[in-house]
Image (cartoon, rainbow, N blue to C red; front, side, top):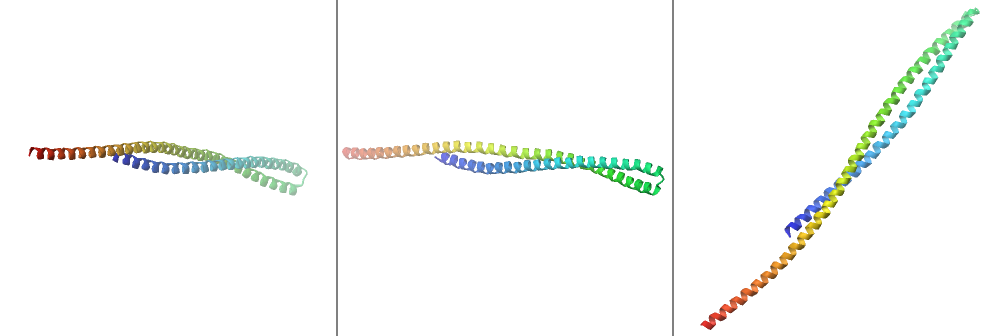
Length: 196
């Protein structure tokens, strides 16, 4: 019977541990899901930044084209003898060229940022997947613990029933022994009186 009580106590301890592990597993799965969602957000930002990079490159190339056209017109205007207008156009052409270079360099930096964001998104997704997997592992362990707890409880109950049955049997045997001892004592007294 004591073994049954011990088994029942062990079953309760395993059940409590199983519940704790289940809560931890559910928390890990939830956190992993949130991390995966953040990964998707970062991936979306990477796409948006990449689109900006492409737009900046297009703009920079368009500005460079206009700067080149102004440079060509400057030569024509200068050959016509209008050096003041030619100087003005040359100055504007140079400013536009520098602006185009700045925009093109920014496009390169923005492209690098987009690539970095994409890499970060992948790394964050891997962390999220690992967290979800860890949580799922804990949930599986929790289920195994719950099953083990049920088995221990069943064994404990069986041992308790056997212990009770053995106690009842021992009590019955003790009662029989007491009756036999009383009968034997009575027969001894009768025998002693008869011999007497």
